Every structure is written in structure tokens, then in C-alpha cells.
Image (tube, rainbow, N blue to C red; front, side, top):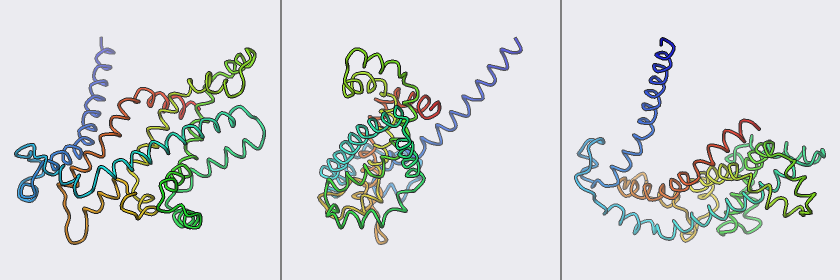
Length: 279
């Protein structure tokens, strides 16, 4: 009985701590959501914790008009989807080759990608922009997609290679015995087993690309090519700042990523615990 009480107390303590942590993380979200419905008068004259007097959607209308959110939203969605798809395909095939081939060249390639993770992309701003400018990739859609793929491929290969160690090689050998080609073996046998790692890669890279500001502002200056984060930053300046409209825009920009995470949450957790830890 004493042992059972101790377990219950420990469980209760963990639940209390996790509840406090959840409240701490949810508090900024509550502030942003509350501010998005407030008028400017309520913003400056009432407490930040006080609820908005009504569900005022004028801030959302202003956000769509001021930021041309329809265009910037489509741009961000296009950059994210295309970049993540290319990363998923390239990293999966590369990781499979590195994990299954024991030649020193492939080991060198793996170390090369690992070194790429250790170098922050902020340190590469100048060479990235210089190469992009000389190749006429700046202010182009394919240029910014190429940039996101280049900066995300190192982490993708590392994650996928770690997960590949959990995939039984006997399944591939059986497929080859049955007459499957290399391509069919990968797409019909290996790829379905990589779903957790793929989901982890898709979620993490989508988060990074969707919320990126520095690289997007560096590579894109044309208004018709700007992303949501760059467009939202225009609401803040040294002279005036439209906080309520910006909060409404932030709420809209967060929705797609939230839906993506909730839909792939099961695979994401499995990919992080099995691929990144066990590998």
C-alpha cells in the first residue's frame, strides 16, 4: 500500500509540473489571440489579461488588406510545400545510400552532412547571397526554394540516416530475391517504413521554412514574392506599430502549421523517439 501511495504522489507531482509548463506555454498564445480581437483603445487602456469586449474581426480584415495576405500566404505555402517535398525525397534516398553502402566515400558524405549541421545558416548569409546573386537566383521563386533545400538537407540526411538503422535489411534482401529492382525496393519496401522519420522531417522543416524571416528577407525584396513573416514585420517600425493587426496576422499564419502538426503528431513522436534517439 505504501508503494502504491508513493507512485500516486509521484504521478501527481509530474502532472502538476506538466500543467504549470503547459500554462506557461499557452499564456503567450492566449495574449496573441486576445489582442487580435481588441481595438486600439482597448489595447492601450485596458490590462493585457482583460478579455476583448467583443469578437472584433476588423483586425483580421485589416491584416488581409494591409499585408495582401492572400498573396503572401500563397507564397509561403508554395515555398514550404515544394521545399519540404524536395527535402523529403533527397534526404530519404541519400540516407538509404549512406546507411546501406559501407564504402568510405559514403561515410565521408555522412560526416560532411554532419559538419553542415554544426555551421549555423546565419554564418553563411554572405556566401549564400553572393552565390545566389551571381546565379540570378535572388528575387525568384526557385531561388528561395533552392536556398531552403540547401540549408535543410544536412539535418534531413542526419535524421533519416539515424532512422534507417532501425529498418531491417532482411526486408530489402527478400525484395531483391523476389526480383525487385533498386527503385522498386526503395519505394515499395523502404519508403513506407520511413513514415515516422519523414513526418518528423516534414514537420520540423515546415516549421523552420514557414516561420523564417532572415533568409526570406535576404533573398526576396519584390513585394509579390514576400512571405508572411516578412509581410508581418512591415507592421512594426520605429515610428508606429499596429499591434492588433499584427496579432491577427500571426493567428492566421499559425493555423496551417498547427493543423500539419496535429495531423502528423503520431508519426512525429515515433520518429523523434526511435530515429533520433535509438539511431
